[in-house]
Length: 424
Image (cartoon, rainbow, N blue to C red; front, top):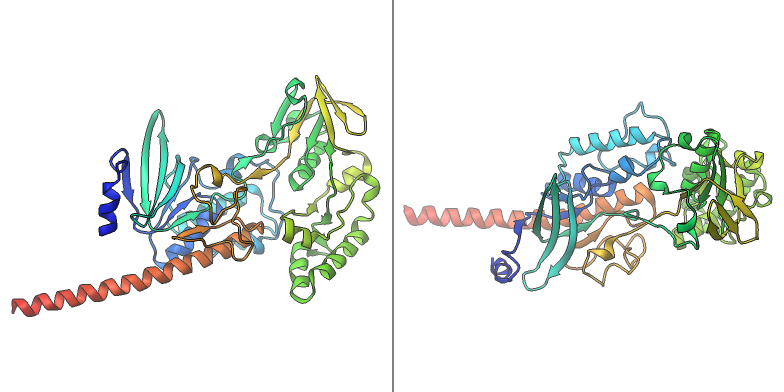
């Protein structure tokens, strides 16, 4: 109670509407936030979820292309406490995954505060609470709300903001330039020459989609990249990698994966796709770089449907000059240049998170900070990593919650008995 009086003494306390949350505040209603909320619900801990968009999983609903499917088998992508429906395919579509998330939120009674954009969050050492300042918009109405809580769970994830590189001359190009988050289908690019910048899973899949819609895509491959088949002899490559890593050191598991890939895909170096000197799993563990799981783009590259080009020197009107001196006439540019965390822009804290918006401690230690601060969905291990974080966080908070609730019940019962004895 003394801490609450200290909070009220703060000169900013009455400057905006304040809400005291009896439990943690979760920032972000994507898969990571939903998973954590569901696990907290299972622990009997109340919570509040804040989401800047007007829907859950806004990245999936608003910033992904139409043909997208989960790149990993559904067993590795389901959230805690509720599996995918049995009739879903091994690799659910974008629409199926969104339907699953919406039913997940409904099942666990997760009702986020939508259109609530967190402007800042800081720990008030005087009161011992987190102060989360938001701006909420409903139509033309704008309001500021401050949430006061004991625990803060950062669930904004690795992909909160688009990365748009500063490329020489891009502003002079004159044609359409879109980030992959705005790309929906290759249908509108039929007959056009399209430059795809970025050779990760998104870049490869967008190039395939463009090719399938009779566009002429060229994909920029500046550095080395691991391309693996999505399945190896009928077995998910990811599932096989997980199995190998249980019994073998990383370097040996990598050698086996690359051997299988060579047997299935053949040599890819002659097509301009040079493999890194470090194996795919070691690269994933040390640098967070995900290998490309091929679903057909490589065949298009081999047949000439997709052209592989080196890095960009500069753009000019309707053209791009490459680092090898070649000049291409192009009609449009798609930037498959990825995303980044936005945590440093709003979280006022420097011990737990680094400047790049990721926890300083690597997986599996990067889920818990000090003073009731937690992070979920920053493991660079996809949905399975986020689910692991969610379970740990809910158990950690749940243990404290249950212990304190039990003590409060004892005090209440004892006080009630004293009152009866005095009355009679």
